[in-house]
Image 1 (cartoon, one colour):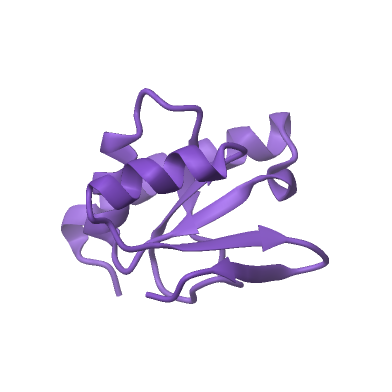
Image 2 (cartoon, rainbow, N blue to C red):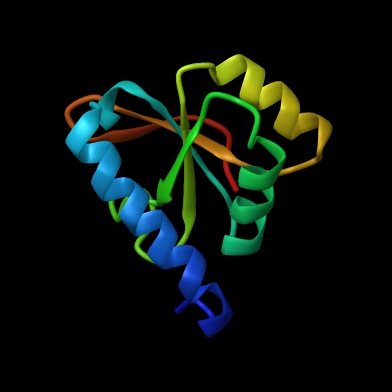
Length: 104
């Protein structure tokens, strides 16, 4: 279970997810998943100038609380995260979520 200090970030991410679901097809993105909430929030901060969307990690990827970064620019985001030594997995949606790169 997530710590209480992450509650505001969780609320913010859930609200963003609702808006994105109303305005975009989230199944067309690469999903970057992180080992924990602090790492996901750090990645979100580092990537704030990039073309990303951040939402709560889908339950099909990880049952606990977490942060997912969505992007169409997989290679660029991988490069940035690798330079920052941030561990991640990459998932796609094709009739369900499938991991395509890495393990955390």
